[in-house]
Length: 188
Image (cartoon, rainbow, N blue to C red; front, side, top):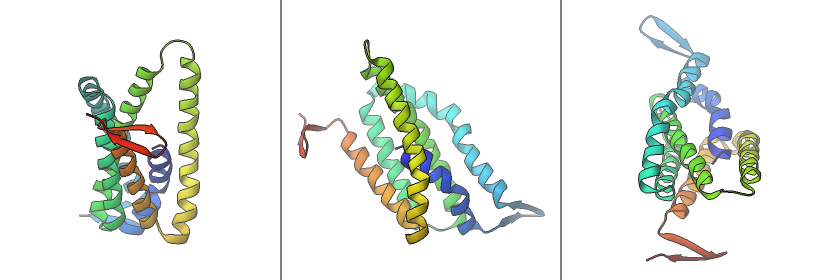
């Protein structure tokens, strides 16, 4: 998830907005440059986190971690696919804000699930690996995204990343239980 959210989407935000909005937008007598627009949209990630994080924590405490994580990740993937196919400037800005809202919820649920699953001996090593993998994902996202995006377009990259998030979200639902590699059965 960090490859997509913290890596790909965050790093390509300004370029995608510029491709869809242009260099500036006039609102009455006020002209906003693309850097200002990108800054406003990107700040939504942090501003919504103050509201979304406690709510996601409450939902995770009430319903467990897997079901809310699966739902949020599935919807996040669908939002990214919509961003890939809708090229309207307004839909792009609103879609990215919505994506960031879901990213905030997803991060809280992942962190809580990690805390639940790592108790006692080895906890610090597991949390350290988790943080290292987050950083690796955030570092690989821009590299892979720009490499593929430059060759095939960001619409394809966002669409493919959205599909992967949907598959991850569906696989995380509690009704799916993995017993062996490739063996997936419904749980009663």
